[in-house]
Structures are given as C-alpha cells and as structure tokens.
Image 1 (spheres, one colour):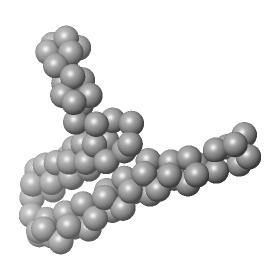
Image 2 (image 1 turned 30 degrees about the horizontal axis):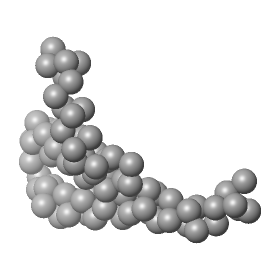
Image 3 (image 1 turned 45 degrees about the horizontal axis):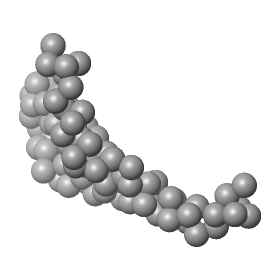
Image 4 (image 1 turned 135 degrees about the vertical axis):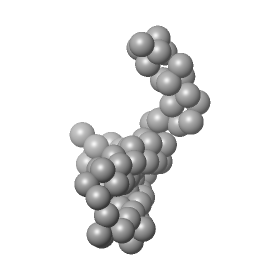
Length: 83
C-alpha cells in the first residue's frame, strides 16, 4: 500500500528510521574500535564492549524518528526501571 499511496512517506521512513540509526551506530562502532586498546585485560574489553553497546543503543533510539528525548526520559522514569 505504501508504494501507491504514501511514496514520500516510505522514503522518509527509510532515511529517518533505518538509514540514519545504522550510520550513527556504525560511526560509534568505528570510533570505539579505534579508542579501545587491543592489548588490555578481559575486564576492560568487556566494559568497552558493554559501554559501546549501551551508547549505540541510546544513540540509535534517539535518532529514530518515533522516539524523541522526552519519550526516552519518560521511559526511564517509569516504575519498571526503578526496581
């Protein structure tokens, strides 16, 4: 149905909700790859991978079109996160 009725919307959806988060996460991954030292302990590597994942997740969520900063803040304030 998008192909016939909402052609501009589908292109904007691809650019804003798919391509932009992929580019941002890719850039974060490349920067993390350059920053993290290769000859470090397993704990440092694990912390680096976890922090890269967390930062990439937040950046991709905020860059997607349907989740803005205020919705993200509301999500963090819910009772589910306080446990």
